[in-house]
Amino acid sequence: MGAEPEVVSDRVWTIPNVLSLLRLLGVPLFLYLALGPKADGWAFAVLAVGALTDYLDGKIARALGQTSKLGQLLDPAADRLYIAATAIALTVRDIVPLWLVLLLLARDVVLAPTIPLLRRHGFGPLPVHFLGKAATFNLLYAFPLLLLGDGSSDLATLARVVGWAFTVWGTALYWWAGVLYLDQVRRIIRARATAIGGAAS
Image (cartoon, rainbow, N blue to C red; front, side, top):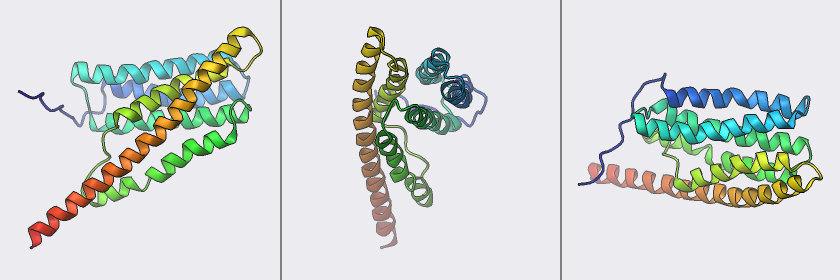
């Protein structure tokens, strides 16, 4: 027998959703810490908590049967906002180059029109692909390491090298997942049009 389909509820106040909201609240806090007093230790802690809650909310949602429509929107939105805000902050600090931020933001700009397009054909946002989760994992771990690498100690050098390795892999996977998402949207809309055309004939 196959696995039972996951039940998606309309609930708002679930543990995973609260974790996603806390992650969103951490974004302005991180920006303040990183760009204001430049309290890198605390900024790193905020990013680490954000990465931990990103891991936990999916696990808890599946374990407790708390997968919700809001969560399916909130979780990836929080991830993208964290990635964008962190990349911008690190660019302002001259830790990462501007082209990297533009490359990451360009991917989301390319995918943005798919949301109204899917809605026009009667579909909601598609589930996050495994590669997209892998890309997010890489980037959410890359940026704290790059922040730690902003120094001249041996530990900073190691953090910088590992951080850039995560950044390169994360960016490549981020775009690869985006290409797969576009292809999935194309196939769904084509199948929908074929079904409508067949019913009309």
